[in-house]
Structures are given as structure tokens and as C-alpha cells.
Image (tube, rainbow, N blue to C red; front, side, top):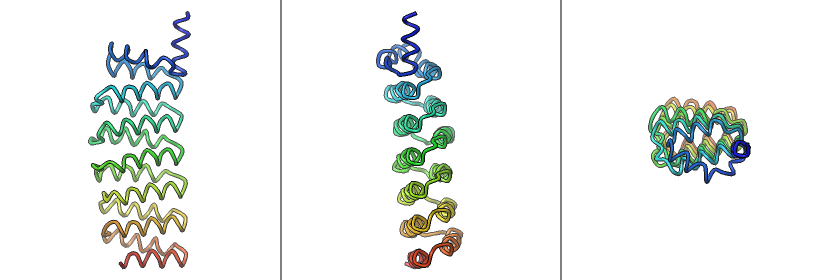
Length: 224
């Protein structure tokens, strides 16, 4: 009975993770840890076990995807973000399966700050692919706050990994932001790369929705 109570406490608080994790991993590897993590009802406890797994395991494709999916079962934004940041830093997001699982988990983060923190971690990766950049844009589009939304867009622009369709999507998202954030994002885009004809048309259209000062600033940046 005492053992059962201690296990229940661990599933809520993760207090025994440093002792239980090595035993689970030794007996059944990543699968055993993931199976146990699914039974955990406390976000902090699940985060602890998943992060220990990320530290110990080589995180091959199937395991990385399983970790990302395990994150979707958590409710706390901070705990989700911590696991995603550490797992993404170790597991290269170089396959459709890993990208889709990661971005799906990231989209489940409701708070703009934590979602932005995770996305900026990925954007900072030197091997950010155009495919992943477009996936990040999809996740960014669901952010509700103009300030954090613009910060992630500008970080993505600075990565210089935007192809033509991604440029156009950045402009369309910038158009939905407040006047100041929209202008800052659009100016950053012109300073980072040459716009495709379609992106330029969207840019000029977006400029028309800005106030006089911002519109002049944005159009002047396009002519440089």
C-alpha cells in the first residue's frame, strides 16, 4: 500500500524521477519511460520524466515523434515549452513526421509568450529548412498578441530562410497586426531579402492599410 501511494505521489509530483527513471530506462528503454509518462497526471512530473529521456536517449525519429506527442497530453504551457525546446535542440527536425509532430505540439501551447519562445528556438537553428519555416509560419498565425506575433515574424525574417510563398505569408500576417508592429515587420522583410513579385504586390497592398507615417516608412523601405 505504501509503495502504491508513493507511486501515485510520483505521478503527480515527479519526486522520485531521479531514482525511477534509470530503472525504467534500463528495463525497457525509451518505450518504458514513455509508457510510464502517459500514466502521469501532473504536468511537472511528466515534464521531468520526458526531459530525463531527452537527456539520456539518442532520440531517433520514432522516439522524438513520441516525445512530441506526449507533450500534447500536457496542459501547462511552461511545461510543454520546456520539453519541446530541449527535445527540438537534440532531435533534428529533418523529416515530415518530426516536423508535423513538433508543430502540432507547439500549436497546442495557448500562451503567446511560451509559444513564441519555442518557435524562436527553432528559428535560431542554423539548418532551418524552407519547409520548417513554412510550418513555423502556420503556428505563428494562431498567435493572438501583436507584440509576440511580430517578434517571431521578425526572427523568422532574420533567418533568411523564406522562399516566395513564405514571404507572401509573412506580409499577409503582418497586415493583420497593429500599425506599429505591422510596419516594423514589413520594413524588416525588405531589408532581409529581395521580394518576389507576388510578395511585393501583397506588400504594397498591406502598406495601404497603414497610417500615413507608417505607410510612407514602409513604401520608402521598398524603394531602397
